[in-house]
Length: 167
Image 1: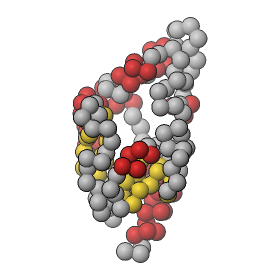
Image 2: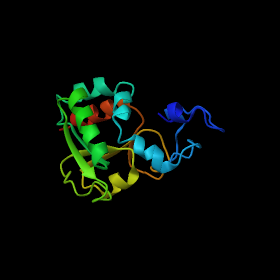
Image 3: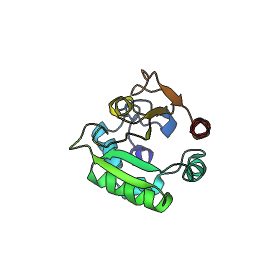
């Protein structure tokens, strides 16, 4: 969306999503952070959302062993968009949206007995989940995580299935 909206601006250069490594989107040099964050509330954003490699297939396999609950932070328009997207694409998953205007993290959700998989360290740190896994590459928002990390969906599936063999 940034590339569509800013391609005619001076100093513009194409940004692929994999080029983003900062929380405040510094790489999108032609736009203010607040404008970039507004993208996450727009229907055209959700029309462009795609699954990461292997995510859909792994989630469909894991649903037979685990209850899949997606807990996500956002502001109201973003949470509504996420809920609709999840209903359309992962109909077996339950969605819990947490309003960022009311809560600073996911600790308001009782995850005891559960597994929290998240890319943001502060959510992992503040959760009461029995198992916590940092997902994805190291970024400024998770680089200090010292617990389990899975870099992709296949690695996560293997880790969870290996762990469930011991139950």
